[in-house]
Structure formats: structure tokens, C-alpha cells
Amino acid sequence: MKDFLFLFRADYVEYAKRSPEELQSMTKKWMDWIGGIAAQNKLADRGNRLETGGRVIRPGNLVTDGPFCEIKESLGGYIVVKTTTIDEATEIAQGCPVYEIGGSVEIREISVM
Amino acid sequence: MEETGLLPHLFRTEYSKIIAVLCNHFGMEHIEVAEDIVSDTFLTAAELWGMKGVPENPVAWLYTVAKNKTRNHLKRHHLFEKKIAPDLRYPSADTGTDIDLSTTAIADSQLAMIFTVCHPSVSKEAQIALALNLLCGFGVQEIADAFLTNRETIYKRLKRAKEKLREEKIAIAPPTVQMVAERMEIVLTTLYLLFNEGYYSVSGHHPLKKECCMEAMRLCLLLLGNPLTHTPATNALMALMCFHASRFEARTNSKGEVILYEDQDTLLWNKDLVEKGIFYLNSSAYGNQLSKFHLEAGIAYWHTHPEDTREKWEAILQLYNKLLMLEYTPVAALNRTYALAKANSIDEAIAEAEKLQLTDNHFYFVLLGELYAQLDPEKAKTLLRTAKEVARSESDRQLIQKKIAELEEKP
Image (cartoon, rainbow over all chains, first blue to last red; front, side, top):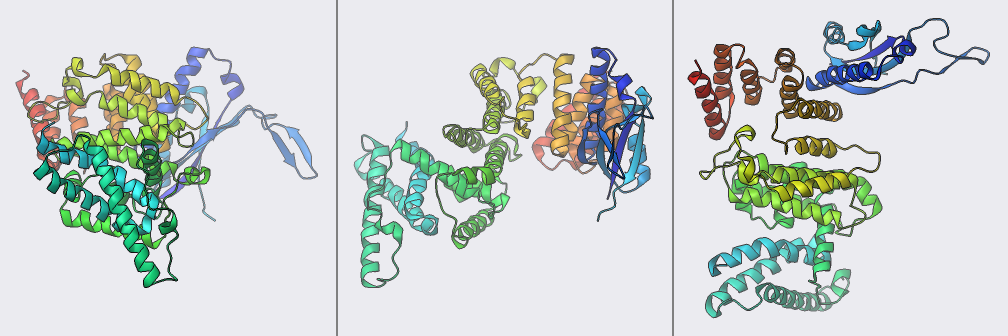
């Protein structure tokens, strides 16, 4: 079994403007999707959501508010999934509700140090 | 109570109490002394009560005899120490020759005993066997019956566990903040398993199984009585047990066969226990730790509502989602999928069920069979037949056969 990090990116600022009912129904879809991964015993870490704000620090202690100053898509959260191959992880990612808000999932194998 | 039934009853209720107090007095390294004294006390009772009749207050009689036997033991012990081993003094022998068998002392000793039994160095299996033996007064044969195994296995398991307690010099002491921090999770899990052993084990109808559950609830109440162990999770576990126990009378018929939830007579559900469960569930809602007991108690709460509403199943589905994120178990995975069928749709549930691939679990095929019952009765029957082949107990096979027969009756 390998661990794969799922990174969820979307325009969360735009997303937050939706009606409470829409937001509630999206939350349910997320919970059902992650619950489904957990039910297959393939959830290694239920991860976290990330707040929209943040800071980026660059060489020379250059600090900017971000991380979404140039591109609208920002990192909204992550989970860790355990599967034998990246194809299996990809298949799981295909059910993610993030696409309904125009977002994306990036899958990265975790290399254990 | 009949005279013949009195002694076994007292053995069940008093044995573990006196053992706990004596162990507290002597220390766990002398557990066999405590066991000898209590067994001897009950032996004396069996002999004398048979000849002279039952004393007016049998419990007080047992306590007095246990106290006397302890005093005599300590005197002999003291003599031995003075004459033969003057340098090998046990400090416990100096703490006085009278043991305290008051209600408070018993509760304190049993609470201390729970934490001793749940020491991390004792294996999980042994913890439950020890709990049944030392905290609930179950004999080797009874534990063997509950675990569906033989006397020898349990005897060895208990012996090894007690040796372990001695070897590791595990003290019996009232729980401290540190002990609670380290062992509380094991303590609650042991009580949870103790309850489940009685509630779900497949060993058929056995009066002991109900007692197993009652004992788990009694010990949980003991934890709630101490400010250190009165935690949100303890309250949640108590709530869970109350909700499950409320269906005790409804879940088996007079022949001891299991009656499934949807076929139960809801009039037999115990409303008092449901009320108590709600009380403990409300009491569990503080702090910032959401334990698996909170989630399971929440699910059990919804199951006290017989109505098949979408609201109910949506709530259950979300609780199972959270439970699985916290800890995976095949049972939770299967139950979640059932809730998914009720809250979302059968099609979605079938797709999700097929991903589970729990092919060595008969409940997996039962679930699939149920999901296909409307869509494709032939397929459902085939799935149920597979379930029957995979099932390991006769009562499970009977239940599955019943389901197959129901499908065959339909046109």
C-alpha cells in the first residue's frame, strides 16, 4: 500500500458566495465521498480544510498575502488515501465533488523519508 | 429467592467485590491469596447454609466470614514472617488486619481494579477475560461459554494475565490524573467490548449474555461516579449502552432466536432506558473531543426511533461517515452502505457496496442481497445463498434462510 496526498484546489472565494442550501448540499457530498473512501478502508488520514487566507514568504523575507493573489484557484484542503497504485487513487479521485465547483484534485505519492 | 439459587446469585454479585477489596488490601502480587480467601468463604457458606439454613443477612455474613478468614491469614502470615523471614516484610501486612467492606470501599476498590485490569501491558483478549473474572465474578466455564471456547483456553489466558500483573508489579491504586490520561481509552474500550460480548456474540441465547451487558453498565456507572473518570466519552458510552439495552426484551423470542430490528415489537422497547440514554447523551456533549462512543451513541439514539424517515437515515449516514473517518471497521462500512441506500438511493448504495469487497463476511452478501431484493430478486436470492455458505453460526444461517424464503414467496 502507498499513501497518496490529494490536494483540492478551487475558487473558494467564489464558492463561499453560494446559498446556504447549496453549501449544505456540497458539504453532504464531501462527507459522503470521504465516508465512502473510509468505508473501503482506504483513508489514511482524513486531512483538513484550509482557511482561504494565508501568507507566502520568499527569499529575502519577502512576505505577501496570498496565496491567491495571481490565480483564483487556491488550496482548499487535503486528505491522504492509501491504495496499491496511482491508478486506483485516480479512480477514487474521479468521484470527488470538487469538480462541481470547477476545481481540481492533484494526486501526489507520499515518499516516506 | 429460592435457597438453591441464592448462593450462585451472591457469588455473582459479591465475589468480585470482596476480591477487589482484598486485592486493594494485599496488592495485586497476592491475588491468589485473595482468590483463596473468597473461594474459601463461599465454600464455608455452601457447607454451613446447607446444614443450618441461610443466615438472616447473607451478604453481611459473607463479609464477616471473609474478614475473619483474612485476619487469620494475616496472623499466620505475620507469624511466618516473624519466625522464618524476618527481613522479608510485606508492607501490606502491616496496614492492619481488618478489611473495609463498606459500600464506598467496595466502589473505590472496584474502580481501582478496573484500572489495574486495563493496564497496557495486558493483552486485549486477556483484559476482557480478566474483567469478566475479577470485576464481574464470572467463572472460567462461564467465560469459556461467552467466548465460544473451552475451559482450558480461558484458564490459561487468565493465569497468564494474572502472572503478567504480578511480573510487571502493577499496583492496584485509585486512578490518578496520569492513569486516567493513559488508560481511560482502554478502560472504556474494555467496557464497550464487555457489553458487545453480551449483546452481539453468536453463542446463541444464554442468560449470561444479558448479565455481561448489565455488568458493563454497572462498571460504567462506577466510572461516572468518580470526578476523574466522569468524562464526555464515559457519558457517551453509557448512553450507547442504555439505547442498545432498551431493546433487550424485543430482540429475542421465547425460543431464544434473534429477532431483527425491523421485525421487533416496538412496544417491548424499554422507554426508561431510552430516557436514560438521552440523559447521558446530553451529559456527554461538552469538551472538544468527539469520541467514537459519541458517534455510536448518536447512531443508537436514532435507532430508538422506529419511523423510517429520510431525516433519520441522513443523520445516521453522516454519523457513520464520521465514525469511519475516525476508525475503520467492516461492520461500520456495511452499516454505512445500508444507511446510504435509505438516505440517498439504492443505486448509489449498490455501487458503493460493490467497492467494499468484504467477501469473507456473510453480512456483506446479506447487504447486497437486500439491496438487490427489489431490482433483481433472482440475483438477490443467489447473493443470499452465498451469504448462507459464508455464515459461520447456525442462527445466522437460519436468519438468512428466512430471508430467502421471503423472497421466494413474492410473485
